[in-house]
Length: 108
Image 1 (cartoon, rainbow, N blue to C red):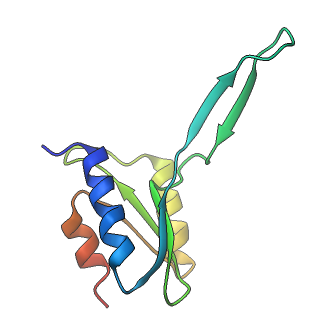
Image 2: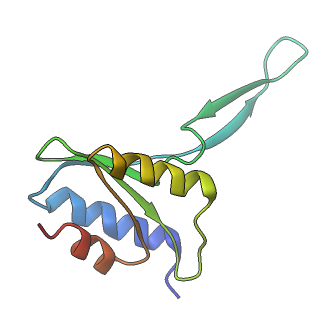
C-alpha cells in the first residue's frame, strides 16, 4: 500500500506539468504551540478544518481542491463538506487515492 505522503508528492509533480492547471500547492492544516516570554503559550493555527491537502486553480479560473487519501483512508465530514462546496460553486474537487484518480478527473 502506498502511503498518503508519496501519493501527494506524485500528484503535486503531475499537476505542475498538466496544461489544465495554472497552479497547485500542498496545504497544511493544524496548530502549533509556541512558547512565549509570558506565562501562557500561544497557539498558532494554519489552514482550516476540512481544507483539502492540495488546492490550486485551473487555467479556466476554476478553483481546484484535491483530498488525498491512502487506499483505506477515510474522508471526514468536514473534508466532504469542503469538496461539496467547491463543486457546488463551479470548481473541481475530488478525492484522489492514486495518480490515476487525478488523471481521470482532469480529463475535459
